[in-house]
Picture 1 (cartoon, helix red, strand yellow):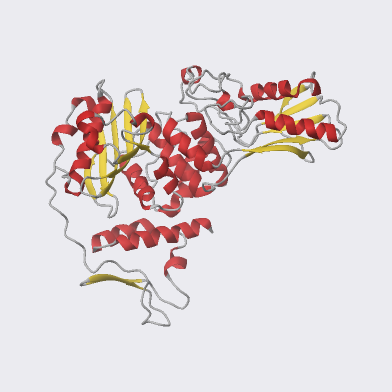
Picture 2 (picture 1 turned 90 degrees about the vertical axis):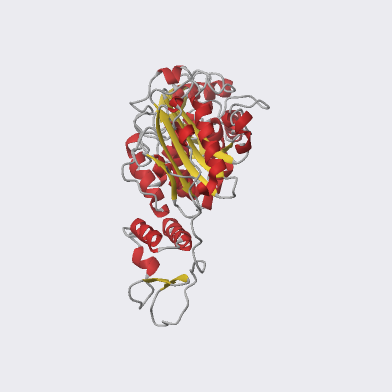
Length: 481
């Protein structure tokens, strides 16, 4: 039902924006394969949907028993004429530091393409993929969803317990008062205290066996196209449903080395916390048997907090956990192979066209992800419009000259765009990307995507910022020449 409501919300939004036959045709093309088309557009006892573009305004009606009933969807009396497209960015886009450039700029309200440089060709996204992962999670579980890490016990033999992960990689081994890179994350010590209280109340003197259950994320925790050096250098952990601090050796260090054994490491820390209650307990990786009962639980922060973290810090491990959660909610096992299909199913109601899209991971770390700049700009149109719960994404995007890695960018001659650009950055070796929303100087809202790759210069980020600033200055008069 949520998917159905999202479809109706998107359709109404798109219809309100229609101001010409051409735009109407584009909207119908995007929705014609929707499986609930008839339910949305055809009322009981009515015939086919009639869409009439009349002189002086667009009227959308659905004939039925009451053919005189007025539609509740209409456009403005007449579409304003497009302004002259005289503002060119030829010099900025020709900067050799941009290497091979793919880019697009859309009028966020109308969807009109103002600027297009190979924008429909799928290419490696780098970390702007995280915006798509955030959208998939919001479409599946919403912003308030939380994950529970539990401890279960065998009622027939209370000396057997299980530590059961559900994807909360932020669960922290830090002591009371200390913070990991995931500020406000739940503490392993809280679980330990609850288990101790349970043992005391139930006369359990000793724990002999601890099952470490990470089965919520089946299959490999490592995408085959990733380079192991990224784990050593602290950019990514094995993606497991049970781990602490993103498997960091140093919980407070964003790029701390990872242990490489996240499930076992979590079990060892749990056993250490239980101290004299489990001095010789055996750690076993497996699934908690049916019949075990819950004796302790902590909950993660809501997904809105995770998304805010991901879109500013660009935490790869957290983004991968989000991707797997979305995949599960879409009805699939949380494996990398299912990301493509899961994202498409979850975001189908939005009208996004997944043709040619390849999703290999949730973070953008794989250079085998293939998504066109146009697709990402269309996603940002949804974000800018407040579709579904996507306002969470807009509020979490970095602001040029103010927050995240964009805080030190858009300086000097580019400072007029500072505060007016919200975006997600991306970087892989020889790949630099930027995707977001521009509140242009003339008041027009634009969405954009830039991919610069190949023989890029050392100042490629400045070159990207210069191009974006030119988009900001041109606004709705931006020329595609």
